[in-house]
Amino acid sequence: MKILKNPEISKTLLALSIIGVVAVAVAFFMEMRFGVLVFFLFISFVTVYLVSEKKRYKKISYLSESINNVLHGDDKISIENYSEGELGILQSEIHKLVVRLREQQHTLQNDKIFLADSIADISHQIRTPLTSVNLLVSFISEPDISDERREKLSRDLYSLLSRMEWLIVSLLKISKLDAGTIEFKKQEISMEEFIKKSVSPILVPIELRNQKLEITSDGNFYGDIHWTSEAIVNIVKNCMEHTDEGGTIKIEANENVLYTEIIISDNGTGIQKEDLPHIFERFYRSGKQDDNSYGIGLALARMIVSAQNGTIRAENISTGGARFIMRFYKCTV
Image (tube, rainbow, N blue to C red):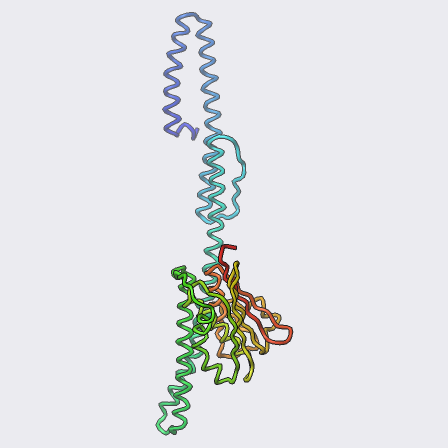
């Protein structure tokens, strides 16, 4: 029997045998019928002990085999026969362990797929402008190129390099947010000052497009000024790119006892109905977007807002254009 190979059981049986032999000998010495009775009681006790230990040993072997199956990738095992006692508690804990391992395996698999897709997307996003840069460099290197054409190619080259720099910096910011290494600061500033500071980097492009930026604000903003400004400028940039020349972009910011709300809207082309559920997804680009769009600006904005106990949503305006609503809650919701 395999059970007898267990040293603990063997030692226990040896001790019981010694005690049993002594007890039977003493009983026989006192009287024969006492000896026979003690002998049968001893045999019965040993039999019950071996049967119970065999059942327990079988259950432990099953649990051990189940754990081994989990370690070797078997995701179809089932440990659900609970019972009372220490063995039942152990079985219950192993069942929880199996469930947890399955969840972690599923999460890791999804992370691997996401990482592979992200690397492919990043490679594609960088390769496209890099190809254009190589072409422009080859054109500029031509010996008989005119000064006018060289100047135009240089401007185009500078523009492409600026776009690549923005892309790489944005990807680094996203990776930091993914890794959870960003520590958001809590700073208080007047809403008017905050909005003006946020949109200052994009005022020149808006002016060049002959667009109008209208700002109304009230109250104070409490949060990370630098990172939230990054989110706001990305949304305003998106509105600017989807609004015709001479269009209007509005920013309405206010504060109440529950949250701070910042609404950015435009009177441009709006958002396609099929794009609304995906507008904040990383590397998502709608069919009508041009090659200047990378599909990460709105994704970065959503990550920044969400990391500060905020929400963001996009919707179309009935009269035309799009509206982005950000709320930063003052308590956990």
